[in-house]
Image 1: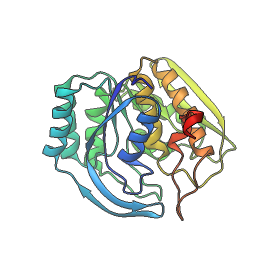
Image 2 (image 1 turned 60 degrees about the horizontal axis):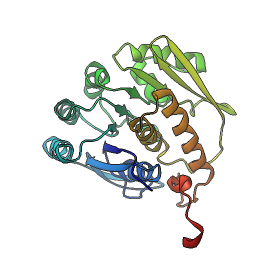
Image 3 (image 1 turned 45 degrees about the vertical axis):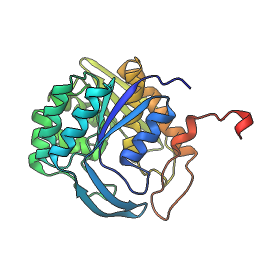
Length: 270
């Protein structure tokens, strides 16, 4: 397989391999691109929850971003877990230095159990500075509620929240609708003066660990290869749905999805 593009991932690691940097690398690789990383935090976790988080210093994060990109310039960047204001400011400075225009932000703000992973100061900088630099932000409903400062109960509420988030400077928003209590999922994509719904049948599975990380990395990969943002979102949603459908069912809690579902192994190697 010929490598199609280069993607730099700025995110935290997941020792269990289902989310974070590990999920990002698997996603980018399985879709045919080259993954590079800047690790923002090291976590000890499994499918039942997070045991501990060790934050990497902002200086070391900047070194990873800039020294890597100086040698191999990425075609796109995916940003995940940042954690605090110093890290956000360091990332802002570094992405300005490396001058990459295609940036996908997964605002890792709320854990699966509902716990906040980011403080109010960090949210203020994210809304005031970082959103102006990104091509697309991909919040789930709890994250969109925090960013837009309003509750979301319907797809119409998703649109209203998305328009409010666009006003902070992002070029586009994809709000993931999986948290709504419905047999059909609606993910809403918004650009200036454009709104589009991706409609899919909801897959009932507890094995959904890392879906947000995977989706944003898949979007970054498709986008880095020249697809439009809308088409990148559409293709990435299909990829994630397939990955949930064929989840390996590992672990006692929220298990990982199957990042390798897109790979076809030649018959002679099976």
